[in-house]
Amino acid sequence: MYFYELIKNLSKSNKTRIYVDMDGVIASYDFGKPLDFTNKRPLTTNIKTLNKLCKLENVELFILSICRLNSQISEKNCWLDKYAPFFDKDKRIIISKESNPFFSSKELKLNYLKSLTIEEQLIFIDDDNAVLKTIHNNIKNIILYQDSELID
Image 1 (tube, one colour):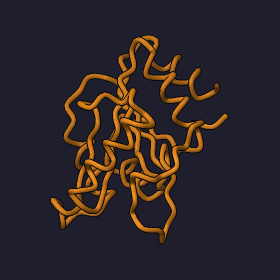
Image 2 (spheres, one colour; image 1 turned 30 degrees about the vertical axis):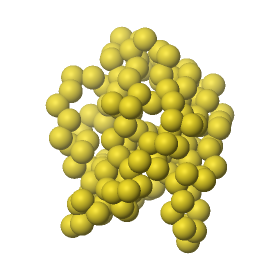
Image 3 (tube, rainbow, N blue to C red; image 1 turned 120 degrees about the vertical axis):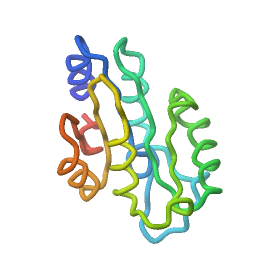
Image 4 (tube, rainbow, N blue to C red; image 1 turned 120 degrees about the horizontal axis):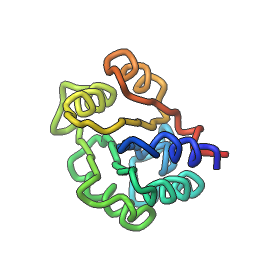
């Protein structure tokens, strides 16, 4: 409930966009296991918190996720349809490394967030400290949270 109240207070007077990583934040991520997105375990506590947040008046919720292959984009969308359908289809940014072979995941997320020209308050939630550090060092006026903040 703490995180929900925090975002509720932050968004009272400011329109707020929240970008959420998928793997490790709302879907389990096991290093070393095959990339089978359709069978990933949903992290239901985080999903429930985000579902509640998307109902706040000034909050827009987005997925910002990276996958290795172009074919995995549809797998991730199917997973979202099943476990987190409150993420509108037009607010799912899933970027394939196959289409962007010269960029790391953290560079792809950074480049996307830097490309935004919005007036709203910007929040990003990820489970990867390297991604959060890269964004922190390169984007001003963004609020960053580790996935553990979603759990009360």
